[in-house]
Image (cartoon, rainbow, N blue to C red):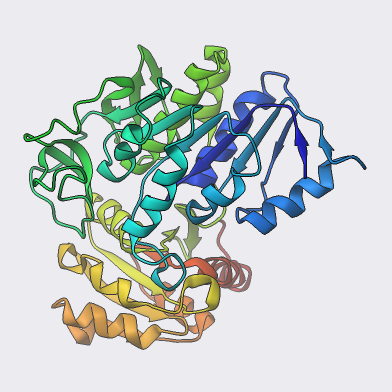
Length: 404
């Protein structure tokens, strides 16, 4: 058994937990604190245990000011039945890896069971009914904090994507939304029992993704990543900074300076054409990229790389929850990966012109195909596909010239 005397902050959720964990770690590092973080992404119970073994002494004592852990959502109850948790940040819940996690409701119930006895800080996405419901798990817990975001320019009154949060989890009534940001994320209320009427701890306002810019608690932030998904992630970071009284200049530096180069909205130049690569492990991740793509003017092309390795989840039926019907000005699609033909069929069944679909299971050939024409490029790759795709892009750049 490990002896951890310092506060433990855990970040969980389907999408965004790596980014938010890294940013929270930076808040404390820049404040002069000694932190331990599972940067390698070992977010299962076995991986967290192995990491702690590296940092403990012979008696099992872990020495740090803060322990900051990205934690797989299905492992939260297991890990924190053994470690005393100070703060749990929950970002969102979507369908993800059905053959490993099962249906989302089962997963939420497990975390809800943990929250019934948890009395630490619970930082929840108040615009996701699947996470916000955890705030009612323990009525005795007075440390529940909700973060929100006001509507951005592309928020809608109707939902256009796969949604898991249409009904109130407490009374079964259909939830009513003032607006949807994406999927089931937005301002909601249950008119029957009042679920959704919670007090915001922090809210992102005045969101302008063209600049990009937003405000929260009277402070203006200029993040490098211009997506509504990043606004939610950075608002969660701002909530953690507020909770732990981090100096505002440090918070500004972390939020304004954060960027990623690991296949998450990462840009490359292919023969003079900008290509943006994004990881998508589930329908919402894919829909995120499609929406960003659609929000950009002009024609563009898409490369979709789909694998079905064990780490991806062998069940790829989730691709039928991707909303390909929202394609706008997409002139060609290239598919690749171990399930290249499956994703090609899925796109065809969405009504896209099959004559514009090119199947190239080999990644290098797929990148060559994508780069063979002029114009803006977008690339979606699932979990085990994203790093091989990055490598294929770099090989192309090395061979043909052009800089990332």
